[in-house]
Length: 94
Image (cartoon, rainbow, N blue to C red; front, top):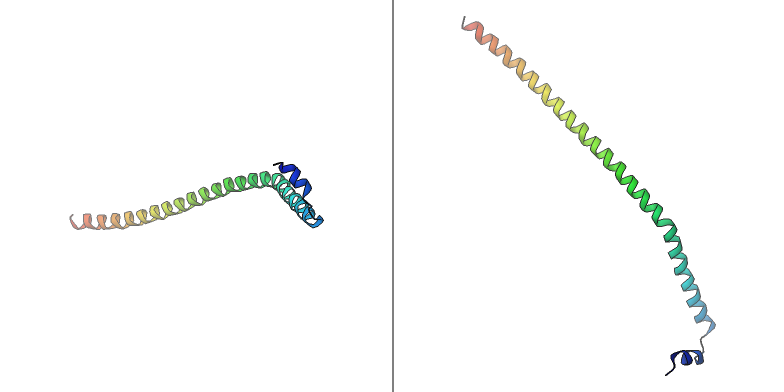
């Protein structure tokens, strides 16, 4: 059984040949475009991911700083109230 010989004897229509030719060319074109486009896109995605991480870290840092500043203000306010109460208590005991 000669496969090549049997295929050569079989008549293939021009439509079928054009279909396979255009389909193959389309796949090769798609592959070529992806090989050119994909590496640059992957680079930009990684670059944007790094920038996004930097921004996120800065945002978290700013939130922590704001939270700590609020706590410092609250502690100062409580210290002033305690100090006034302490001075008022000391004045009564004299």
